[in-house]
Image (cartoon, rainbow, N blue to C red; front, side, top):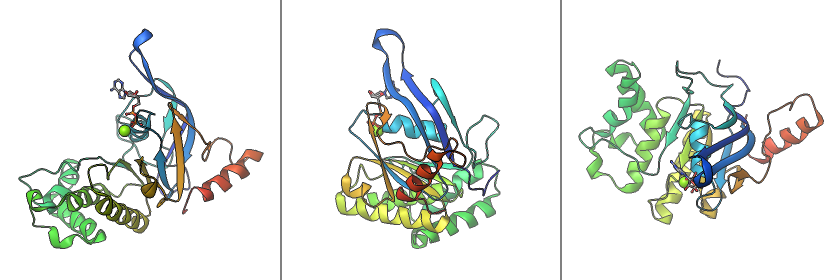
Length: 249
Ligand SMILES: Nc1ncnc2c1ncn2[C@@H]1O[C@H](COP(=O)(O)OP(=O)(O)O)[C@@H](O)[C@H]1O
Ligand SMILES: [Mg+2]
């Protein structure tokens, strides 16, 4: 079921511990929150506080060891992974022997699209990011900022309802990184997708509609708690949090 006002991801008392016994590491603990359609959020906190782990849990790439996470506003694969959540990693990881258009089209082909349809949709996604002129370029010819914008186009080609990006500017200089963030924000806005980016750069965080702070595995604020938001007095608080954190829908 898609296209509803339901959260694109929602979690309750979510936890992820690595290992067991005395050497175990609690990466995420007791996180309850919801990401609403169209919302734009920066997830900030010191290195090791659990940002990447939480993002991977939101993406269905990591298994929870406690609590629950679900995706009421998106479809699911037979394996339970959300189908409309896209992930941008710190490194663009383009395949060097494929040109830009083919790199952007490849996940669609792997997802069962015909080559012609995948190329058409990839071209539209590149145009959305004003990158159409680079379609025939090979990754070697791209700057770091261009490569990361292509990686964003590759994610958006699948028309996700939520884009998660883990330190997407971590390998770029400040100016290039700022440009990539502007491009990302404009593209998700045009596409109507929600976006969450982890960063420890306050200038990057300031560009987002809302900022969620993490410390030692926990969210310091209580952003957009989805539970009972329509029925109890906390619902009003959740709704005001939603607008304060930049929900566009
Ligand atoms: N695969 C893993 N195995 C063991 N410990 C991990 C693993 N991934 C992350 N951790 C630990 O979990 C904690 C949170 O890590 P992470 O989510 O990467 O934080 P951040 O992204 O905020 O830097 C850290 O203590 C880290 O060392
Ligand atoms: Mg990290």
